[in-house]
Length: 226
Image (cartoon, rainbow, N blue to C red; front, side, top):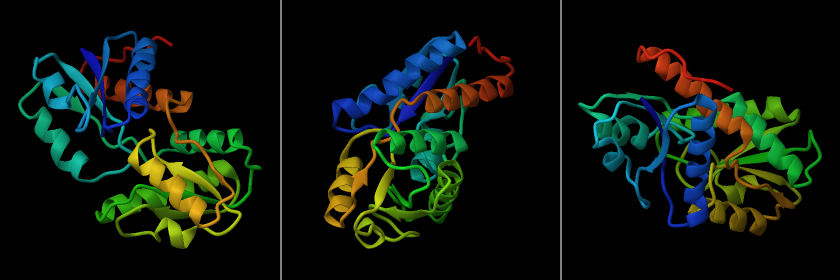
């Protein structure tokens, strides 16, 4: 059995490296083989990784539900010895990582924050993003408003961000959307834009927990060693 983490994929090398780092660290903690894969824009694609037929638990590094979670990933795993996890977010561990990134950017704890997600037209994804905002509010100890780069269900960045605001990108890796968040937030007057969540220890811990649960569901017990 191996662990496969699957990210969306981006044309930015640094963005794709996030999944690779998470896979290595989570695999080390679990004491099992691990590999990073991508839905598109980067190799190896998930379909190619799973094509070898090796039994796998797959943890998506996608922060909300949507087409990739509901269609692309199940299709890639169809007929194969694969146990597929749900979207990584929302989760309190992601909120904890976001709070850490805000502090690292120099934002005072409790200060009002705007969480900015990529966005989606899927109502379930919008509900996930709203829940992520509430979780960040709990972790941060201050008010959090939610915005998106695109899609429906939340105001766009240019309307939600006010002069002097602090912004927390609800994005796992640098890429097109993180660039858009920074450009649009700063144009709207944001004082600080924190870094993306990245391979934060809380994210690795979350992947380990999800993988351990999938291993248990698959009848393989838990492989965690650290």
